[in-house]
Length: 170
Image 1 (cartoon, rainbow, N blue to C red):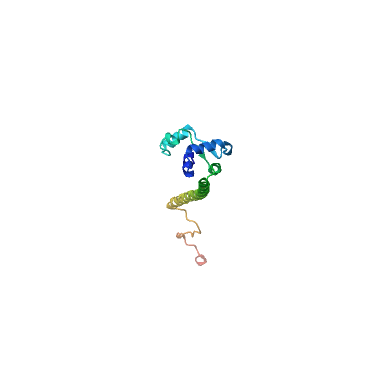
Image 2 (tube, one colour):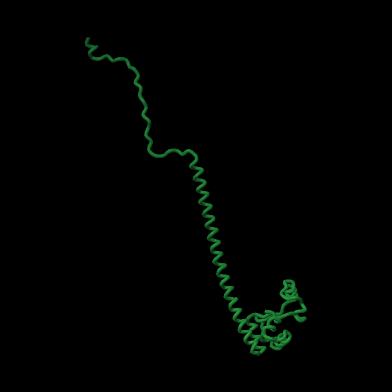
């Protein structure tokens, strides 16, 4: 969160908040707080996050993490600062839970996408085999199995009569 927004929540002026941060600078390591660069401020103005650079009070703003917000409440030492810090910490915790849930959902969606892709590939393979089967079945196939040969008619040729014993006896 940016210092001017926190100052509004804590009920103090942004300049007083920055003074307390400067007096207690050792309590705010880099992962608690950092100062925005000129480019980052320009991006905030261009995206309408702030109306103009003048709204920042003429200085580069500080940005605070959830740990920095908690430390800031300790530095400011007001009842409102403590109550607001507790509420902000609760919001950060909820936000983290939402992000974890979102990540889990994203992973589940990716699993489903992979399954669908595999199903699509498998369906394509089945249709390809089906097409090959249809192509093969449209061609005349050689019949298989036991074949009964067709009976050929045997035509007897007339043969010369044989002489039998009777004719020989005469």
